[in-house]
Image 1 (cartoon, rainbow, N blue to C red):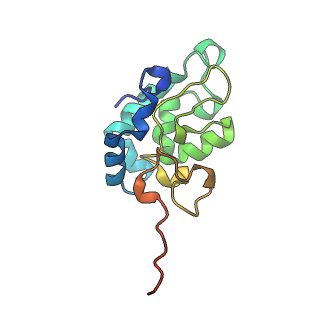
Image 2 (tube, helix red, strand yellow):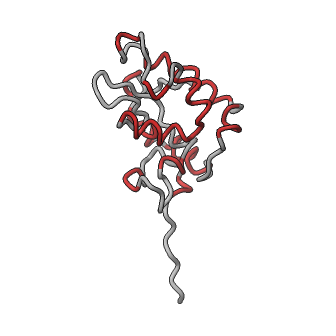
Length: 151
């Protein structure tokens, strides 16, 4: 899959609300793989390899990547797995869960990481990022379930 697939890259904003996305979202579990498992996941590998290219030009004309990457955002994403979410939010104030990799112009956007990292993104009730709950990027299985009342 292509990481740079957002409204800014020509993908319609309606994709996240399409019937196809809703169906796919229902099938995604509200769990995430560890960093080691993600390193062998084809989609994660592809997205990691595209991250340096996505961010090129944002930091001093592309000569430097964000310091959080320690020289290679691809290596950081592969090393951290879904842990990249917290590291990125803290260091750059941007939210890769929503597909936002920079918080200042020019904005760099991509597919959201939430479908692959729902726990790190706070998709499930009780996680650190309550503001992200209910995002269309989150798997539907993460939505809070209504509490059954005894009859």
